[in-house]
Image (cartoon, rainbow, N blue to C red; front, side, top):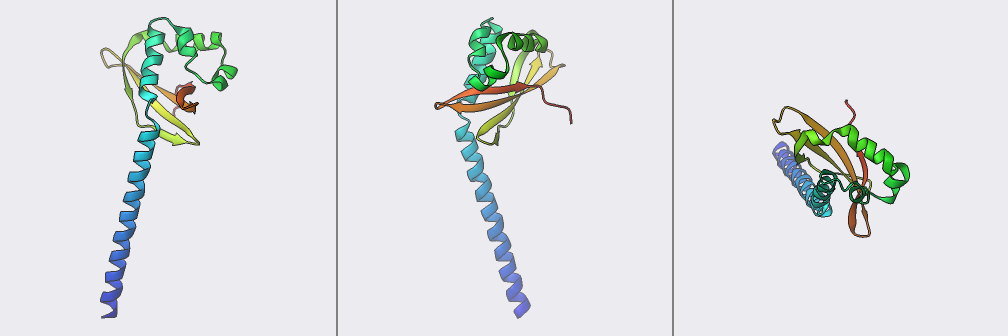
Length: 141
């Protein structure tokens, strides 16, 4: 009888733990999605401005911190080195939250879908608006 009682309590505790974990995961996911609103339009605006030659406009979508480390000429050289004219499609990955910043991997794909280039964008919220704080190619692991 005691073994049955322990088994019953154990299974209920395990079920309660799983429920709490699921609730925590759901709340965290909803919080991340709500906090990341506005990032996809910013990415679209960034690539639209780059594609139309408005490099200064794209540069101004970055934070002051980014601009203090990367001057305009370095930004232009970085973009030129990416050869963005080869890519037509972009796909956003799942946002990741890290120290009040959102990191999003964007995959650029060529028309024939044979070439793909991932870029990691780090975003910071400045005065209730998202700004790009870092752009880099992910390092190979």
